[in-house]
Length: 145
Image (cartoon, rainbow, N blue to C red; front, side, top):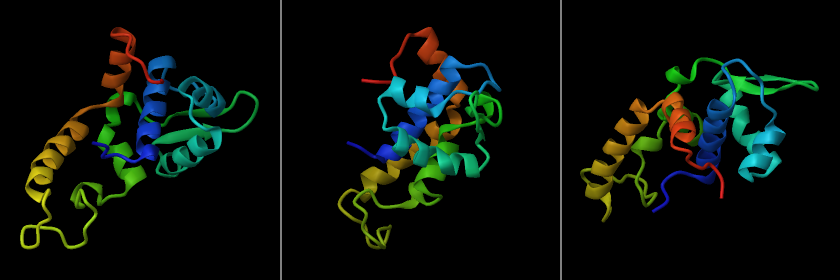
Protein backbone atom coordinates (compact mmCIF):
# COMPACT_ATOMS: atom_id res chain seq x y z
CA UNK A 1 0.00 0.00 0.00
CA UNK A 2 1.37 3.38 -0.94
CA UNK A 3 0.50 6.10 1.56
CA UNK A 4 3.05 8.84 0.89
CA UNK A 5 3.17 10.75 -2.38
CA UNK A 6 6.12 10.37 -4.69
CA UNK A 7 7.19 13.88 -3.67
CA UNK A 8 7.40 12.88 0.01
CA UNK A 9 9.24 9.66 -0.77
CA UNK A 10 11.78 11.50 -2.94
CA UNK A 11 12.11 14.33 -0.42
CA UNK A 12 12.81 11.90 2.41
CA UNK A 13 15.30 9.95 0.30
CA UNK A 14 17.12 13.16 -0.63
CA UNK A 15 17.33 14.37 2.97
CA UNK A 16 18.56 11.01 4.24
CA UNK A 17 21.15 11.03 1.44
CA UNK A 18 22.37 14.43 2.60
CA UNK A 19 22.64 13.23 6.21
CA UNK A 20 24.39 10.00 5.25
CA UNK A 21 26.89 11.60 2.85
CA UNK A 22 27.79 15.02 4.23
CA UNK A 23 28.85 16.67 7.45
CA UNK A 24 26.43 19.18 8.98
CA UNK A 25 26.81 22.52 7.23
CA UNK A 26 28.36 21.14 4.04
CA UNK A 27 26.50 21.98 0.85
CA UNK A 28 25.65 19.26 -1.64
CA UNK A 29 24.47 19.91 -5.16
CA UNK A 30 20.95 18.97 -6.18
CA UNK A 31 22.52 17.55 -9.35
CA UNK A 32 24.54 15.06 -7.30
CA UNK A 33 21.50 14.01 -5.29
CA UNK A 34 19.43 13.71 -8.46
CA UNK A 35 22.05 11.55 -10.17
CA UNK A 36 22.79 9.32 -7.18
CA UNK A 37 19.13 8.71 -6.33
CA UNK A 38 17.92 8.57 -9.95
CA UNK A 39 15.36 11.35 -9.42
CA UNK A 40 14.55 13.95 -12.06
CA UNK A 41 16.59 17.09 -11.32
CA UNK A 42 13.64 19.39 -12.02
CA UNK A 43 11.20 17.35 -9.92
CA UNK A 44 13.68 17.16 -7.05
CA UNK A 45 14.22 20.93 -7.22
CA UNK A 46 10.45 21.47 -6.92
CA UNK A 47 10.25 19.06 -3.97
CA UNK A 48 13.08 20.79 -2.11
CA UNK A 49 11.72 24.34 -2.61
CA UNK A 50 9.10 24.20 0.17
CA UNK A 51 11.63 22.59 2.50
CA UNK A 52 13.91 25.56 1.86
CA UNK A 53 11.05 28.07 2.20
CA UNK A 54 10.11 26.53 5.56
CA UNK A 55 13.77 26.80 6.71
CA UNK A 56 14.38 23.06 6.96
CA UNK A 57 17.05 23.44 4.27
CA UNK A 58 19.40 26.26 3.37
CA UNK A 59 20.48 26.82 -0.21
CA UNK A 60 23.48 28.54 -1.71
CA UNK A 61 23.89 29.47 -5.36
CA UNK A 62 27.14 29.38 -7.23
CA UNK A 63 29.81 26.92 -8.33
CA UNK A 64 30.18 25.39 -4.85
CA UNK A 65 26.51 25.86 -4.03
CA UNK A 66 23.81 23.43 -3.22
CA UNK A 67 21.67 22.64 -0.23
CA UNK A 68 22.32 21.71 3.38
CA UNK A 69 20.26 21.08 6.47
CA UNK A 70 19.43 24.28 8.30
CA UNK A 71 19.61 22.57 11.70
CA UNK A 72 21.13 19.35 13.06
CA UNK A 73 19.69 16.13 11.64
CA UNK A 74 18.87 15.04 15.21
CA UNK A 75 16.34 17.88 15.37
CA UNK A 76 14.56 17.10 12.10
CA UNK A 77 11.93 14.39 12.27
CA UNK A 78 10.12 12.60 9.45
CA UNK A 79 6.86 14.24 10.47
CA UNK A 80 8.41 17.68 9.84
CA UNK A 81 9.26 16.76 6.26
CA UNK A 82 5.97 15.02 5.50
CA UNK A 83 3.86 17.87 6.86
CA UNK A 84 5.73 20.39 4.71
CA UNK A 85 5.42 18.33 1.52
CA UNK A 86 2.00 16.72 2.05
CA UNK A 87 0.39 19.50 4.06
CA UNK A 88 -0.52 19.93 7.72
CA UNK A 89 -3.71 17.85 7.39
CA UNK A 90 -1.99 14.75 6.02
CA UNK A 91 -2.59 12.69 9.16
CA UNK A 92 -6.22 13.80 9.36
CA UNK A 93 -7.43 12.68 5.94
CA UNK A 94 -9.29 9.59 4.79
CA UNK A 95 -7.14 6.89 3.18
CA UNK A 96 -9.67 6.68 0.34
CA UNK A 97 -9.78 10.47 0.00
CA UNK A 98 -13.46 10.70 0.91
CA UNK A 99 -14.54 14.08 2.27
CA UNK A 100 -16.28 14.01 5.64
CA UNK A 101 -14.95 10.58 6.56
CA UNK A 102 -14.96 10.23 10.33
CA UNK A 103 -16.55 8.55 13.28
CA UNK A 104 -20.09 9.48 12.17
CA UNK A 105 -19.61 8.85 8.44
CA UNK A 106 -16.80 6.28 8.17
CA UNK A 107 -15.48 4.76 4.99
CA UNK A 108 -14.82 0.98 4.80
CA UNK A 109 -11.17 1.51 5.82
CA UNK A 110 -11.79 4.10 8.53
CA UNK A 111 -11.23 1.85 11.55
CA UNK A 112 -8.09 0.30 10.06
CA UNK A 113 -6.69 3.65 8.92
CA UNK A 114 -7.34 5.31 12.29
CA UNK A 115 -5.11 2.75 14.04
CA UNK A 116 -2.47 2.59 11.28
CA UNK A 117 -2.35 6.37 10.90
CA UNK A 118 -1.82 6.89 14.64
CA UNK A 119 1.04 4.37 14.67
CA UNK A 120 2.60 5.92 11.57
CA UNK A 121 2.25 9.45 12.96
CA UNK A 122 3.92 8.37 16.22
CA UNK A 123 6.78 6.68 14.36
CA UNK A 124 7.29 9.71 12.10
CA UNK A 125 7.25 12.06 15.11
CA UNK A 126 9.94 10.02 16.86
CA UNK A 127 12.29 9.14 13.98
CA UNK A 128 14.93 11.70 13.10
CA UNK A 129 16.90 12.11 9.90
CA UNK A 130 20.03 11.43 11.96
CA UNK A 131 18.73 7.97 12.89
CA UNK A 132 18.02 7.09 9.27
CA UNK A 133 21.35 8.48 8.07
CA UNK A 134 23.13 6.37 10.68
CA UNK A 135 21.20 3.29 9.52
CA UNK A 136 22.16 3.92 5.90
CA UNK A 137 25.83 4.15 6.87
CA UNK A 138 25.93 1.52 9.61
CA UNK A 139 23.81 -1.13 7.96
CA UNK A 140 24.75 -0.20 4.40
CA UNK A 141 21.13 0.33 3.43
CA UNK A 142 20.23 1.63 -0.01
CA UNK A 143 18.43 4.79 -1.06
CA UNK A 144 18.09 4.13 -4.78
CA UNK A 145 16.99 1.35 -7.10
